[in-house]
Length: 215
Image (tube, rainbow, N blue to C red; front, side, top):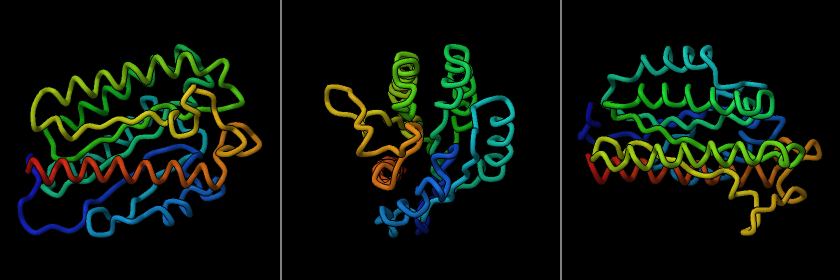
């Protein structure tokens, strides 16, 4: 379904994530500070669950929610920041499950006017030596998949991807742990949460502008 061409309200945005999106990890507060797109985007709804992984149960929850709006001509931008818990807990098998279930979510969005922004795997200074190689491989596959989709024409411009790791690392690739991360080495501090929120909003803004350019 194509987006409505009637005069529209700002685009709805929904963020799906794990504990990175909870208030005691500063995300909602920093999202409010970073929110500067009132005319284009509504303030995002946050669906954050501590310890959340991408699995069959999550896809069922996502599908049930998406079914409520999939036939609407008013686009809603979904932002997916998940997968790092899969990799920390299950290593390669976790990465395989992220890949498999993310493809299922992509399929839900195909043929609709509802954009999907896939965030790359969040870095974790505490486990970086073990999780980074798998995370980088998975990020490369997801990025390639989204780029392939976007070449398929106007209707596929609803898909986007960014590399979360790059927001919190030096150009050489080293994580700037003391600047962006809490002492646990997993979650973000206030500055890190602001950096994440700002880039999510920027990604959503870009997808919204694409929809307006290609109605």
